[in-house]
Image 1 (cartoon, rainbow, N blue to C red):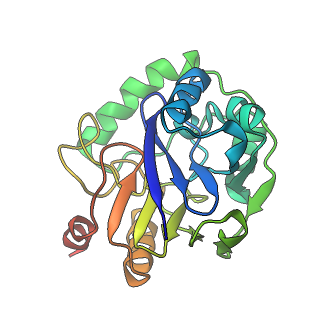
Image 2: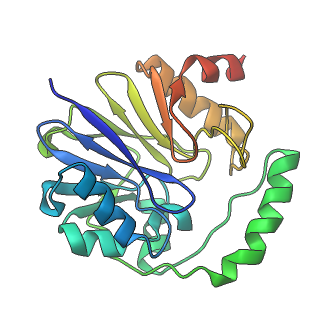
Length: 225
């Protein structure tokens, strides 16, 4: 199986283009990053219409900000959990509570800039629930799995290879963390840990966070001890 995993930086975080028999995009980036998206897929020799689905891991502004523009460029459907569907469709800007001292400081910094952020509204085509969804129909050997904790509508994409795209269920690197580990923001840390136990039991091997570079799932195993 030919599998390609390609990060594209869209603002403060990374989105991922995943290619197998089909092509999907994971997350929609910060607002006003459509031009960066176009440059990114051109570098990969991917046509916009090749992307058939945009899986949004959760509804925070830095993951949905360019979703409307990317949907218009590609014609792809948007998949988002029902708990956070309104966040995109009504341009809502939610901030999760901090769960570490540094998270508390960083949250205050973000709150100062949040009024400047504008999220264009877009319709959600595939409303995710509490059940898993196979990506086979989109030519991807993997599954969308509900993984609440960072937010209650967070989902992850787990490929058969063990590659896990987790949004903000984990973070890696400055300014959020000094190294790989659990998030510094979460609505429910116990659910974060339960979601990670599920992903590890299901065979997650390599973690692809929205913030920071990929890392071995062993770092999460150690964090859960």
